[in-house]
Amino acid sequence: MFARGPLAALRKAAQGAQRSFTSQAAGARSSAHTALLGASVATAAAAGGALYYLEKNSAHANMEAEGLHPPNYPFPQKKLLGTFDHASIRRGFQVFKEVCAACHSMDLVYWRNLVDVAYTEEEVRVMAEEYQYTDGPDDKGNMFERPGKLTDPIPRPYPNEEAARAANAGALPPDLSLITKARHGGVDYIYALLTGYCDPPAGVEVREGLNYNPYFPGGKIAMAQNIFDGVVEFEDGTPNTASQITKDVVTFLNWAAEPELDDRKKMGLKAVLLFSVLTAVSLWIKRNRWQTLKTRKVAFNPPKSWENKPPRKH
Amino acid sequence: MVGGFTKAVSSFAYRNFFKKESTYFTTVVVSGIAFAMTFNVVVDKYWDSKTAGTKWEDIKHRYASS
Image 1 (cartoon, rainbow over the protein chains, first blue to last red):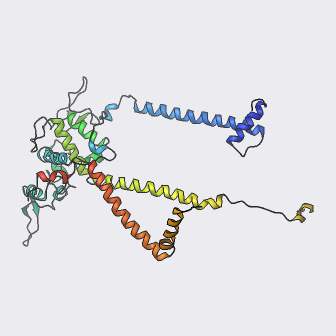
Image 2 (cartoon, one colour):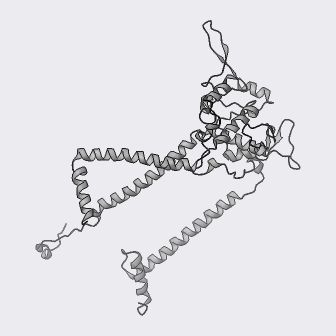
Image 3 (cartoon, rainbow over the protein chains, first blue to last red):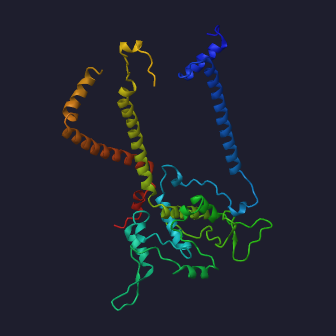
């Protein structure tokens, strides 16, 4: 093979790669074309990678406005097929009820949502009855108070936004029903925020009424630290450190925002399994049915009389 | 071309299940139901073994009132 000329060797290589090219010049052109294409793709990929790296590792003067990026905590429900720890949801609801519900509402969660998730129906009924709800009007047209039922929502601490702001120095404690889905960073952000209170660095002024928290965009948050060691006693004997309390309440908040997570992931596994098999079967069937078309040959036998006819003038 | 045992099985299947549209349809529906039942049971068993101890069903015995 190498005894032949270099141009012939190039042609052989080009023919191997692209059967449509038949000329020597075309062969040389196509390998240069391939090299150019490869170089452009490599440059684009390298440039894209460099820009991505710079974006992720950038430093600029306004980083406090974004909030410190929270670390990656090993919540079990974050894994691809991971589900909630329901014992943690139960402890988390206790924390929410005792610590957070004083200021935060959770309008989209109803007492009945807790049944067979973290509590038995009896337990939820008893918990709901501890609260008074306004109902009515009765036959006389008056509103009346009654103990809570399963169909009632988790009670609101304030009747409306104005009352909430008045009681919290103008700041509105947000509703927590969807908070883990509503904040960039999700469960990691909420956990880091709740455990991240610290003294402001030198030179940072925090006015009266605000608290410094590096994870909060802007750095100054109206909510003070509420979770400390021992602030809640767990009935199942779990050690009540601040980090454990925070982990449980964040798991509860995640459940409140995504109660369908367990079922969704189970269905997702089934769907992926089924669709992969069906896709493979479809591809095989398609190729099987197209075989006859793709391998058919068309033979054209011109009539003998054509060979001697002169070309027609148009 | 297939031969021997494969041929016998394929011919049997074709003549008894796939040749007439009514039997073909019945075969499809029955196999679908059977597959769905087994698939669900198998995947659910696998899922339950992977999530053992974390679901409500696994902890409710601690709080059962009845």
